[in-house]
Image (cartoon, rainbow over all chains, first blue to last red; front, side, top):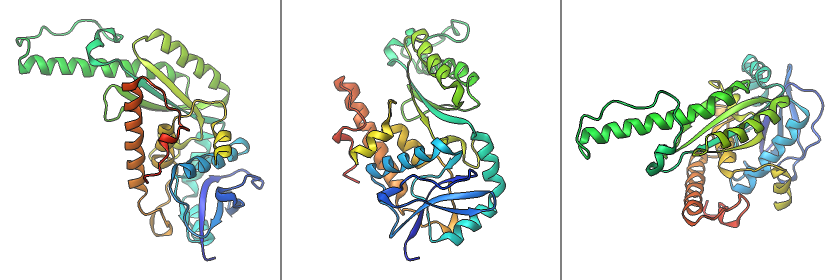
Length: 232
Length: 78
């Protein structure tokens, strides 16, 4: 083989995929024991542009419709089937455990956006209201630090108010984390297929209850956040 | 590619940011010398994130909503 094998997913489900791979390439299975990798052959590794990301995602989603799968990170290629069967054999226990973890469930992404700092009094209070008396005069360094600590506490509280009820409806979760902007947080939930509707409804209720916090959810996604070696 | 993407979008409100987070930061990672990884996948990730962040800023400041399929989001600069 002169090209590369591009890998989409690892599965323990039987049957040949009827899905078409990237750039129209037919999908193949490379099996090792109870596991198989779903791959397609290409002259070179696919280009990482936006269209290819979407196309990759479509292939993985179609696979997910009829099988329990572990999605691979985008851009995973190997030189040939031997390297793949060796990897499947070497990491068999890890992959089998991950397949059990995600079987029958899908991933939902949740993002929250808090109101701008000047309206932080609209933020819901999770704990007891009131804080320490500000010892510093307004505008002093101490007052500033206290103010900032209070704002960070409220941001954490708001994320918790979103996370707790959603985590209760999920099999597993990646708790809220902030990006560069502390007013934004994101979390991920592994939700049983049968509980997806209830989960979506709860997101809607939380949006209404926590007026100042804007919550958005996307999915169902393949369980990308729950298949890594250190995944929750 | 627009037909394929339309199918992938299905009924849901897809965010390109969520897609990038999952495909480039999640999933099973196969290590080591068997991987002929895209050499600068990390640069692509950073580039797409920066692009998306700037689009989000535009949306917020201008009060407009750009969908994930808007040509403005195309990663042509990559």
